[in-house]
Image (cartoon, rainbow, N blue to C red; front, side, top):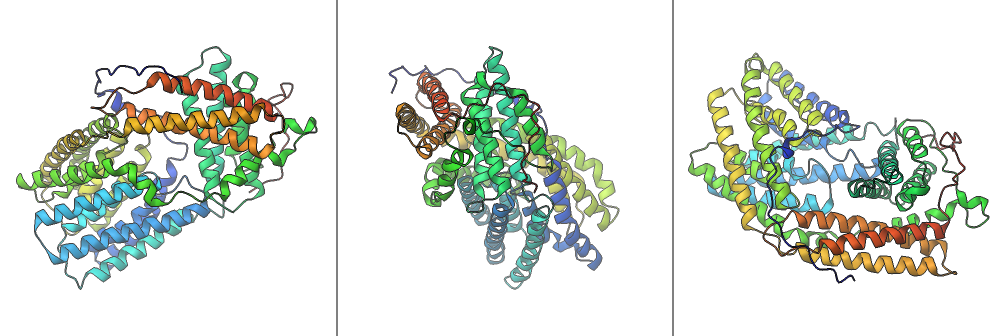
Length: 567
């Protein structure tokens, strides 16, 4: 390890304007937006026809599961969506039974806070992806404050389960049309970011941010492709070869043709055949095209880490969530609020990987909710024209929230806030001024108390995780360098070493970034992190050259050879 000294701690500035800056929308922003409308509309409209719109809150709980797992391959998506539905039903069952046994508000808030902590920890450990625990916490917390009897619980759970099954079908509906759509999108993103990095590096303006983004995109592409374990196909193998080419571009940007990577990315985004990579080693008579995927096959065969081992590092986040949600709910009760779960959910939505990101989310949540209550006041006259108008307004808010939230969380919250307020009107209309006032107060209480709890519960282990990540990179680099220098190294060993080092570099950057956003801890070894990354990138380049993976410089970017891998 390097003996470089840690970088001294510096005064942290709290971002405000930067937290509200809009980003580019996702390439597939319309997929979750359309999915949630398709999942919510049929059950809600059926209840309108039956004159039982008061039950729509339970069907909506199941329908909102359609928001999950859009980035996963369909084989993996089927399992993830099923677990999301079961998790939603489990939280809903606890909330309904608790609500039927007691009306003590303090007990209800306490149960809601504990449920939020469990949902946060499990969603982060399983990396279920957006919207993560927030939807599950909203459903369970809201139903805690709906009067119930034990006899009603089975029927309400059945409604949620039926809507959840419909949401599962909606999420899986595109599979017959584009069976490899998620893998194609992830591969295209990896190729695109690799091309951007190669352009900056070749132009003499190498950016650490562009490099980190490219490595993260390549890592995400591998995670997507490996999610469908034991389900290899011709198309997926062709996509894996393209991701290998993106990895090669990161290791040796000077020997990469960015235009060729962009051409591949454009071709992969479509629905045609997957482009051939043109294996440079075949011409050398050495290894052969299949050998570059030996490491992929080996990684696919490795079982994932058990859930319990992934929950340990999340203990500080779980404690923050439980404490912040409970205190926010208690303060809301002390102020005389009728719906303390709004403050509870606001607090639950704040907690991110570190305190700096948590602060940014607090700013986004407050701004979005304050603008959102104004939107609610504007749409209320339309929503109260009748049950059908109310459902249509809810559908519009659902679509708007998912269409906008990818640009910035606060922008999506502008639609989420009126959605939550409209849901409270499903059993019957309520005074608009009272709803708006309560929502503003609970938002401010949840944000302030929730962030105060995050300050109180610090993550002292962040520095240790950086040290462990540095050690992992050093070991992976030494192994890769030893194999690259050895004349008798096998293709499988070289590929596994290269993939292991690339993954360790991504983990080091993510761990260092997360730790840098924590407060009240000793200074981090930032210089050692930078030196370790630089050494790892040099070793990756040497390994790539040893494998013979560099593309032929004489190959033009307009190569049109394709492989018969149509989906």
